[in-house]
Image 1: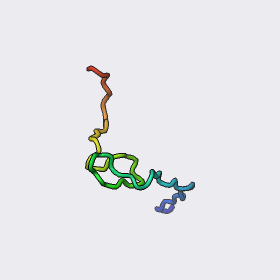
Image 2 (image 1 turned 180 degrees about the vertical axis):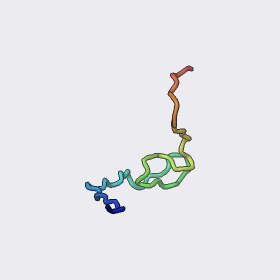
Image 3 (image 1 turned 90 degrees about the horizontal axis):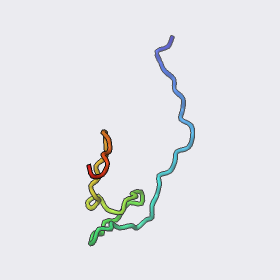
Image 4 (image 1 turned 45 degrees about the vertical axis):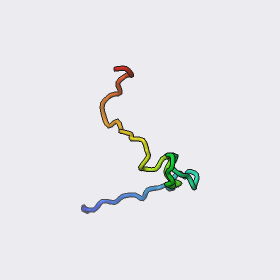
Amino acid sequence: MSDTMKGQRLRGGVRPSRRYSEGRVCEERDCTTKISMYNRREFCHAHAPVRFPRVRGRILPEGT
């Protein structure tokens, strides 16, 4: 018996990256930073609102 493993090539096409309109600028007042056409957000990194991912646990109802 051989000690090597054989795999198969992945099939199917590669989906292209989603693009957004070109020439967009950060929506923060007085900010002239250009946003990449691959970035879906409307703010640059410096002005983006802080978002914390929910890694684990449960969502508590409002008012608790």
